[in-house]
Structures are given as structure tokens and as C-alpha cells.
Length: 131
Image (cartoon, rainbow, N blue to C red):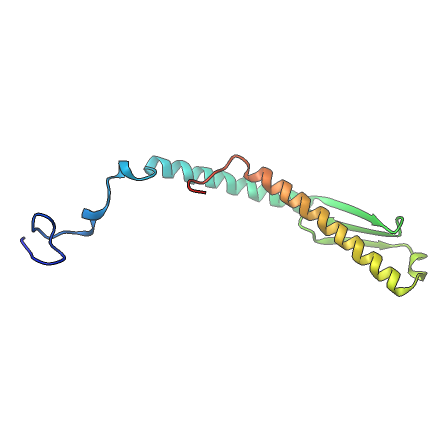
């Protein structure tokens, strides 16, 4: 069918949108590459799920104030325990509060470092094209 206007191809025939699609071999990757990429993404997803489970099971303990404060967190930074020496609680309120904040910050920093290292291992060796 011959047509004029924007729908006309070079020959004057009706042009569909596939006329503007480049051949597959000129694309950055082919369908086999997509399959490989999907398998790689699934493997990475499994690795991340395993890492998340490991982090949830991991326990980090931080001691502060000469052992007067002990904080236990998991690899995600969730606090699972807090132990305070009764003698330490006899200190001034501001001293106890500051020591608690410092202990919690240290525990959080350790959990964050563990989380980053664990997730880095879980995603090591995986690269996405163009990234």
C-alpha cells in the first residue's frame, strides 16, 4: 500500500515502528547476553539474601565506660541487649547518658562496617553493563 506523509517509508510503503529498530547485532548486547545478565542478577540476589540472614544472626558486643555499659547489636544495627553496671548508675545523670550515647554510636558504627563488608562480599564480582 502506497502512502504519503510521515507514515511513508523510503519506498513510499506504509512504515511500521520496526523500520527504525537497529539490527540485534548492532545493539550493545544480544538475547544471550540478557539471559546471562538475568542469571547473574539472580545469583547476586541469592547472595544478598544469604548475607542479610548472616547479618541478622551476627552479634556484636561493645563495652564502654570500663565495662560499665555493654551493648549487643546484630549486623543490621538492631540492639539486642543492654547491660548496665548498677554502680555506674550512681554516677551523675549526664555522665551516664553520655556514656550510653557513645556506646550506642560505637555499636552502630561496628554494625555499619560489618554490614558494608558483608554486602560488598555478597555483590563482589557482579557488574552490570554500563555501570
